[in-house]
Image (cartoon, rainbow, N blue to C red; front, side):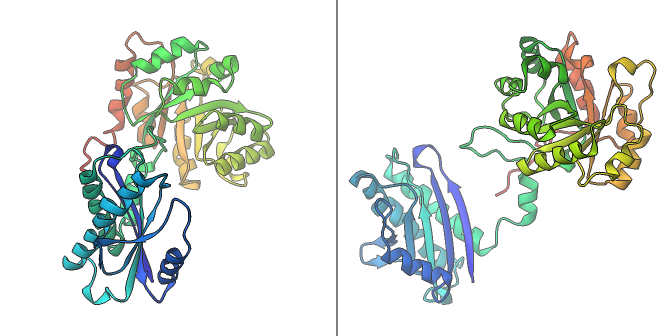
Length: 393
């Protein structure tokens, strides 16, 4: 029986990141503890945590450096402030009742410690590692984070070192506004992106004409302006589905579009490859007579289905909003997007029928006031995800 905890505390080069395991001496943690003490590796020598020489904490705690100690300067930081911080945190955790006093002879702790090679301030190294160890112990022994916490934060969070967001499309944040970047002019498209409002409701589409002119590499070009955006490659694939998915994935696309007019075999392979790579698969049902029948004949379902009225048919063909409820009844986990001349006066009807995504192109991208035009739709969608968020660890 053992518990696992993690915590990051502090900033700059002195930042502390603690990973730890706490459990019984007679179990797997005890075995790993003994193995760590007797199998040393160059630059990562495990050491007992001590409050001062000759005064180890209990439960006995083994510190394992994560970063290679390249010289005595690095060793001093580990055998000095970091070692003392971890030991004091464990001792205080016992005093405060975080660790039961009757378990101090039965349990051991293995604690991985990160010390940046450029860390200089011993006071901060001590303070941050003390705080991180205490927090990791609390979280371990309280089984934190809870599943609810993980589900709540997984699509909101941004890793501080990664430096960019990798958004998904969680159901609880729907509906979304998908902006179709169809004009085959990269520089004008980048200017459109610069004028869009900041919103977690907005997703971007590298439209078919844009991709046909510049290739799927245009997705990487768009990332230069919108690095945190969810970007869809509107391939409208009809053949060699797996290859086109791979090409788009390599250019950092978050989702890819296959035409519903492709053969079932092509669509099946397209969806399989997208899911294998962890990106969204989308079927565009433009000119598909019966989308429900099409979906029923597939091995697996896409994440998104587009009910699409073509540009050339907008004046003759009505939107098929009545299909939204039919598709959702048969395939409740599929998102429904609507496209083809969607404007502020038609969008409410689509949303009322249950549309998850409004796909809008010219109304926004050719507007004299791009920000205002986009906000007309955003105002129909509800609040952004973080406007009312309260940070609680």
